[in-house]
Image 1 (tube, helix red, strand yellow):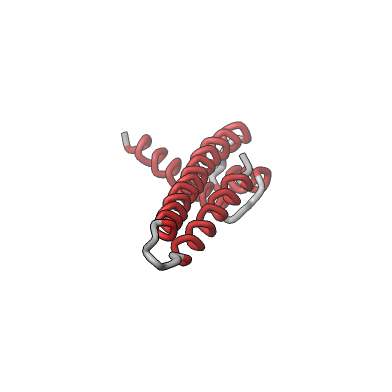
Image 2 (image 1 turned 45 degrees about the horizontal axis):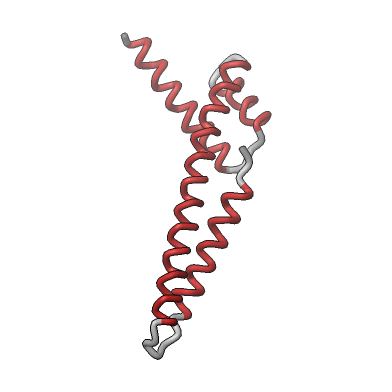
Length: 114
């Protein structure tokens, strides 16, 4: 039972370490090399761990990018509706913020490497 606990802790530490290396932009080869050396994992296990963490990382980033596009479209729409609604004001702040948020989200979504 203690052995499983130690293995789980080691596995969690390896996942956190892998996620931090991916976030820093390290290549697959360098991450696998670190895992083999620092956590004494076999090559296949290191590659599997890298791919599973990378998948979670990419899905998370894509989700954030989609959210940015959605909220950007919301701000843009609100700004345009209020401007066209005849209130006598141009809600340029909401419009510009919406355009920037949509642009940021689209850029993030399209540049993510799977």
